[in-house]
Length: 179
Image (cartoon, rainbow, N blue to C red):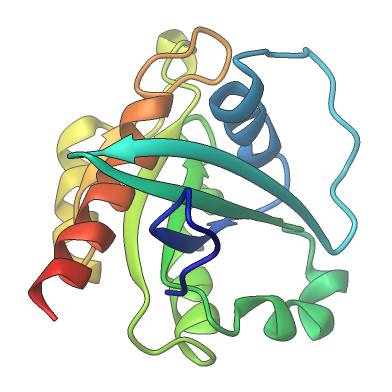
């Protein structure tokens, strides 16, 4: 948390974590630009984004770090995790392995940012006929992992995308106000 200017009160560094091709880049593009592309290039290392918002009258900057999900980038990821305050730990509702791997993402990020708050995000809820993870299973996993919540999104339709980011932003802001 740091003051960045007279115009904004806080900057929150938020990671987008999860296996490759779960839709992290699509989620951040939907949140920042309100756009969706049917094809994205694989993220190499990390791609930064920013969005400015007001929550409860407080001006914040979301400093969003879209982290590459492929194993070959694991060595460089650690440096991107430092100083992170929150994360959207994302999985693809149609890929059980991406759901199972969420615990690895949390552990990896918390090795550098032990106080990291995160929300578990099941993406691609528009593909209902291909779904492999139920809402109840996602909610249970979020509780088990200590997430601040669980939400299902669709970067394609925009369903719950802004809500996922705002939920973590509000929690981070509330925690700062308590200090």
